[in-house]
Each structure stands twice: as C-alpha cells, then as structure tokens.
Length: 165
Image (cartoon, rainbow, N blue to C red):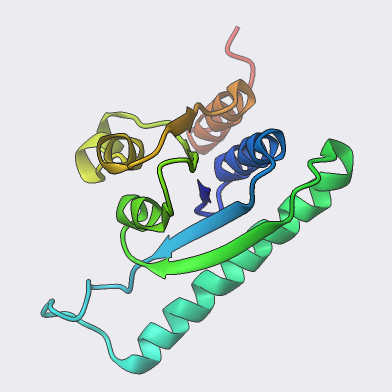
C-alpha cells in the first residue's frame, strides 16, 4: 500500500511501492486522501454537497493522473504490478493507517523535504504512520535530483544564477 498526493516525489514513492509489491507478490493499493476546504461536517465553515462533490471529483481525477503517469513509466521499469486506486476523505496519515488490512501489509510513504516552516504548519504523515500503523512502514526519502530541482526553482524565483559557483 502506498500514499500519493500527485507530487513528483510521490511518483518516486509509487515506483518503490510497485517494486516492493512485485517482490512480495502482493497487490498495490494506491491511496489518495482528500479534505474539503474549511474542514469537515462539524466545522463552522463546512461546505455544501456541491463543493464536496467537486472536491471528490478533483481527487479522483488527480488519482487517475498519478496512475496514468505511473503506467507511462512502467514499460521501462517492468514492474509487473497493476495498481488499484482509492480516494479517501480524511487526513493522509489516518487514511493510510485505516487502509491497512492486516499486519502482513507494507505501508510505503515518502518522507518529503520538510523545512522548518512545513514542520510547524503540517504534521508529519510518516511519523503518524510509524506510530499508528499495525504493519511495517517503509519511508522513502526524496530523490537527490528532487533536491537539486527544488534549489533551481528557489534560485529562479529569487532571480539568482543557476550555477552557485
């Protein structure tokens, strides 16, 4: 089982999960968690049914795009695994832990690049999964190429030269 959010890093995690599923001869469940803007039904800013339907449809479309990108890369990787997608209305950590079927499953999540600002604003999905999952959790670090790409984006946004030498 693997969680995705549509980012480039989550596609890397999806490929690692596919390799693990192939090795174990297991099914690959891809979970995309979504939340409506403003919170759930008990919040003051809960949205109406039309907004919820739009959010659900947007999550399903994002999951189709992620699985499509995975399928495009598959011929080169020869994973031999067909992913099954599932969208869940929940926070990412809770959705992933709840999707675990038994203790023999393997939950694969990306660690992402978390600077001080992100740590302060959002809880860590990996930490939640490690603390609450009834199965082993494989945390996949971001690709070193992703860090280089992020640096280039930051330098470009600040209008700095690409080469820091």
